[in-house]
Length: 240
Image 1 (cartoon, rainbow, N blue to C red):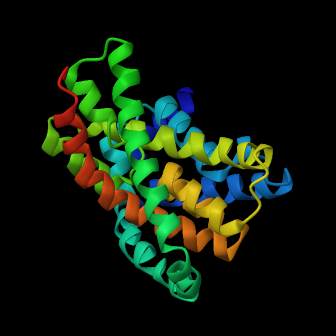
Image 2 (image 1 turned 135 degrees about the horizontal axis):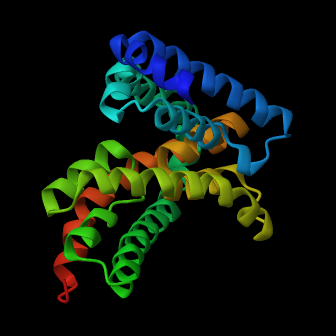
Image 3 (image 1 turned 30 degrees about the vertical axis):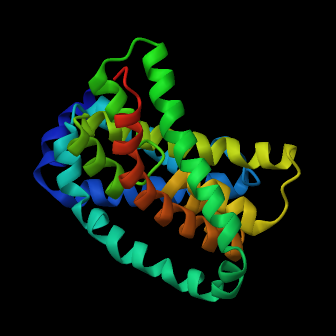
């Protein structure tokens, strides 16, 4: 620990160390995940984040310093999101065939995600600000943070809720869908993309191309639906 604290000024002085450490942590986490036979509790985003958080705490490095160091990764989110259009284009025929069930699943899933978050937080005594922060938790960050900010929530709390939702969804979705005997990759992908947004989509892209395409579709549609429906649900729930 003392050695890490002595390195803290050096780590804070340049963005390169944290960028390299993040990439190394993810590469090691991915290798561990593959060696474990794709164990759901060892998904790379969970183990890599845990390693980086531990390193930040042990070295005493503030998050703002780390964020400056990985700005390049934040910039790459845009091109990576656009690249999701490639698997979507390959599945355009199946998407046209399934537009009705896709619409129903999107509406039901989005409303349940929003209302369940509001009701659970309210039942546990959460403040209005907390409730509004948790409402968009099932949308990806680019959608969830502006929605929370515009409705009166705390974007920082929303970011934590989105991350926890994505990790929990990616970990629990596989066993749960197997228990329910859901084998169609399109159904699996859409369900995971709807509930676990970008983290679940990233995992499904590694599992099956069709599942990845439908997860990307669900992630994008749910983001738009969340931006529209969160204010509506909040307005309809008079006790807020």
